[in-house]
Length: 257
Image (cartoon, rainbow, N blue to C red; front, top):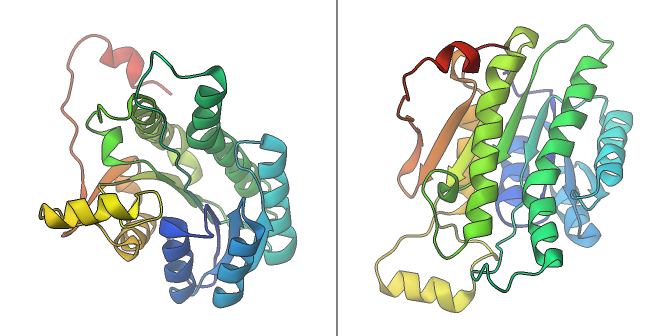
């Protein structure tokens, strides 16, 4: 998709990966709606990129719909949705509470469902003759390989990868592409400073948020034949992850849409 002159909505845009992506998309010539639960953070980034700030809890469908409506009202459309939120769950499944489970599911998975639905409604409701658009969801390397210290986080990130891959063929005829961004360890507030120091001492390079933003642009500007790709992001760059095929008679059903 050509980015210049188009409109992007970025959730979790007030800090970390979302902030870096909002900056990068603006540099690519997009008008950006920055959505974050922290109104001050969203406003600061929006002012920096000359965009629109919207405060919303993306685990609440009503607030997600309102954020998209505000973006369409002020900026005219949503051409690219970068659905970017993540919450790490507790490591011990024997002590996790219903509230903890509901919160990580809401932030990591429900927000994606609500965001995709709102994006499709925005694209399908256009009256200017344009068709198509792009959905880029933030997953994780924990969506490709299990992360034992975060079983709930792993479950939700695997869910994002599966959802994005299933959507791609279903939306192809509408010119809508979908991608998952799967970064490894990133230098964001999600990782405590002492943990970052330990990684550095062990010789583990953290991924800069700007590298993830590069991957979002790579995904958004790739051809339709790459829709459904999960981009593994390493300190050396982003590559399209290749999934092993599971041949069998189920393929007849699984490939229908």
